[in-house]
Image 1 (cartoon, helix red, strand yellow):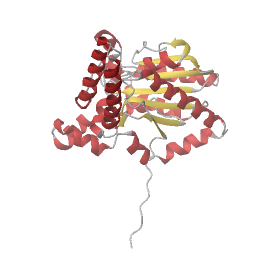
Image 2: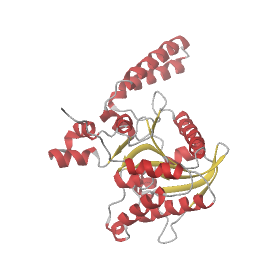
Image 3: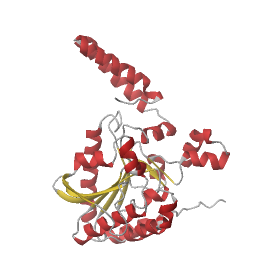
Image 4: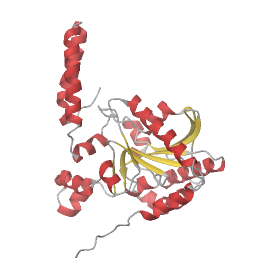
Length: 313
């Protein structure tokens, strides 16, 4: 059953009315209601706030990594385990074909349903997950296979066991190794990109974000608690953090924004998947045309945090 957010209630009511018209066989009413629905969707999604975009990024119906992998990756074969400790199911790795291109797909998976969410630790990877991702990336590098990374996590798992097994070292190692991989890499934030847990699989030649995704150094709830000692100020924190794709592109922190279907990826998974597939193949074509893409990747990474200040008279 579809889940609707507060600002989507009018859309829900129209959807319900359309279903009722279909059951009654009233095609005229259905046609009129569908036109009204199109207008309402255009009106709602053209005027949403940063906080509402955060809600969409966390929407329970939003496609996760496995949803996209099933839709765009043919003949997919899963790679499991880090060869050190265990298989962390919060990160998934598949080799398969996207279009006619062989690719390695690495994604953070939150899981659906209580049992699956627990098995995947709600999409919060442990060190072994990041080491599995690096193992898959090194395998791709060995055979010159391009890599697509799907970022979607609240953050790395902060548990005692994860810290004992070297959580920060595993993330730092990935940042270092992904920066110098000798194969094209493309990362897409598909939902929520949380701090180092997201960065660990987001160092790439091209870093893009879905239209209704977010990328932040801290959750808006955590920011509100620290700055104002009031978690209820989440809307103010969301706006101040500038975590939406448009703001991050203005700052030069991401390369592209991938448009979602008008009604959002959570209502149209197939077309959202097609958008990611198209972006991956187009970006890959651009990257491989330049044999100096490794040095360009390095220059891009080194430019992060740089700023200019205009002189005042």
